[in-house]
Length: 589
Ligand code: NG1
Ligand code: ZN
Image (cartoon, rainbow, N blue to C red):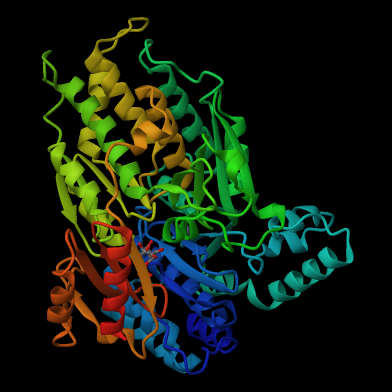
């Protein structure tokens, strides 16, 4: 009774937007921020129910990643720290689109019964809330604590208001906050007894990391996150073979484009905990630039041009772009006299670097000695159709098992859990390295044998390195901060410059296009999205066109995050890739 009243009264304040059909896609719900008020509230309810069902802590993240600043989004982190179970997505869709509070209540009651969720059980529901620096997601707490207004403007991603312009911006955000921001908390707390814990401004991977850590009973604060990353990084640095030059004053600087988003502030803090590596951050949220506008990993990867505030002065330096919520990273090189163009070192190449390093450690591990604690580890890599064909060839040449899944982290992540070590990356820079529990145990057993003070054999050092990698790299989702540290320490380990790394293989020229169509869901694909099954005839038309180009490869698929159909083409020359993409775009239109 109490529950029904509470839900109905709070739900009556949140009617869904008219004429919009929301869908929980590969990255949760995303839309223009003005449309999402009721959605955020309803996802709050969803998160609380998920916590009840799984008897675990759940995460709710407000972000729209690399989307333009006027968009926003909301998604759930499951108990493992991964994405919401696909099995609950239809319910998420139904909730978001329920036309009235009464419908909403009906849906919830039905679902609770179907899933066998016990609402008056003894489980203490807890949802961790996080958000990036998009201007309308400001913490209520920072508004209400008297005398605590200061953190507010840093949270808003602007400087302390001192000019009329910044004061206006600040007031505008403040007003929007009053109308927009509490929905997540309201949703969670409309389930009786549920607690919403506001974790403040975070990168998406930080929130996922915290949810995972909480459910494993481990230390789970933001400070714990930073300490785990920095200490495992130091451990890897200490294990660099003596003959390789370590951070040497020339190679120890990396310059980061933070997409005018949340990654900048976090990386500056993390950088202070590291020795040797100097991280210079540009385009941080507090620098005043517009989020994802001419900056960030998505822009740099798709356009292959310099982000704002980078230029010819950066030739010869390792450069990195993060996306708006810091779950993607791509490296790039500014060629001499670049006139805006860059040499992109994308997610595929990051994957290749990680695979090479891990394969090397595994070979040390398996060398002679007693194998009593370590079974032969099974290493697998996972890519999508967007992976450059040259990277797939390279990985296969290394003798690695390459698997393909549809686009979307949830698919790649799931596949990667099938291995002792599973490495997955999307070309756009989202990826991580997953270690199975049993493999970690065997590594721990191996390293426990190392007597204090002894230097350890090559095998033991390799085990220590792999353990450190498992702590450094985010086990919940792709994480630009931990990914950056792993790239940096592997380059040092190999004694490689970014150019040497980039030469591992040469990308085939490729082109990506977006096509606006009336109904993108009309296109249905199969075989990891490489083959069109509907509408009829499109598959044959694409194949016919593709066959005209040497080394041609082309596929189309509806985007899960934008209202467009994406076209990808690869061929032996940039011109051919462009033409192929354009011709196929016309077939789709
Ligand atoms: P969609 O919009 O479904 O293509 C994009 C990326 C995905 C993934 C999601 C989630 C491309 C081509 N697609 O998905 O890889 O990162 O966003 O953020 O980059
Ligand atoms: Zn992102």
